[in-house]
Length: 156
Image 1 (tube, helix red, strand yellow):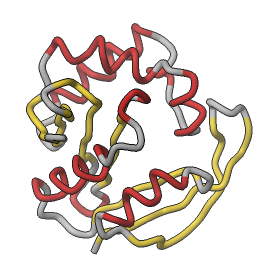
Image 2 (cartoon, rainbow, N blue to C red):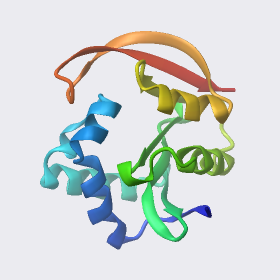
Image 3 (cartoon, rainbow, N blue to C red):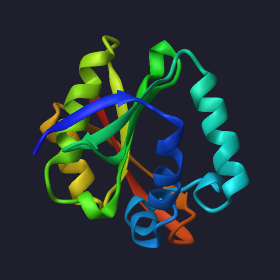
Image 4 (tube, rainbow, N blue to C red):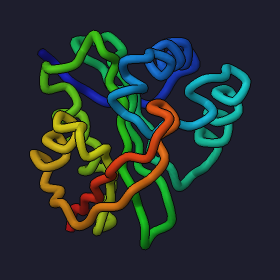
């Protein structure tokens, strides 16, 4: 399977909306924001993200089809990675390949990431790309309506 990253296009946004509003994806990710539930907030979020020159934002393609998105954001001393792969594409190595390509685009180190402690798949993706667990905390997970354990990972 060919995995690639490209600049985000307007036509990607309806696919991202569908992915982010998938209840199973929300449950797995656990830590969600207002834009995962409300199209107006979603549109505002993406307008803001797309206008920020410090954000590296890419659409993830799997054999030419939009599989999700990946980004690096935050101030230089706290750069963080994030990615979302639609459920139809889970378990195929797409997230790992996409993250490996994304981190090549960002020279800043360290890079940081967070994952729900019970999200073994996401933690494994990050570890395969060189991230190591550097801490743990608790936070409120809107998708689960409860506090959860969160794992912090760092790529040096």
